[in-house]
Image (cartoon, rainbow, N blue to C red):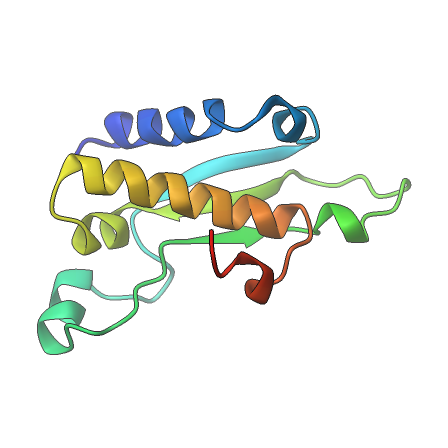
Length: 121
């Protein structure tokens, strides 16, 4: 999948968020990278271990629940790892759904939710 198409899927996921969440998002960007730093080709990882868990995305920043009014900084970041998502999916529909779930999960961290809170996302 092209990077442009992948970005479009991320935009669709953001556009589908309820307005009450979109309105509360400030100074956060969604980025797409190929792989997490230092990770090798996900196809090789999955060939060696089909049960390997790939990192689909990450939130980098300070959750809104921990920010003070005095904090000004670079934007918080949600990073999607395109090659991992593609390796875990077989069709474009599966990629679309994984992008949606990953965006929701990482924005959950932005809003201050912990992993246990996000299990059902």
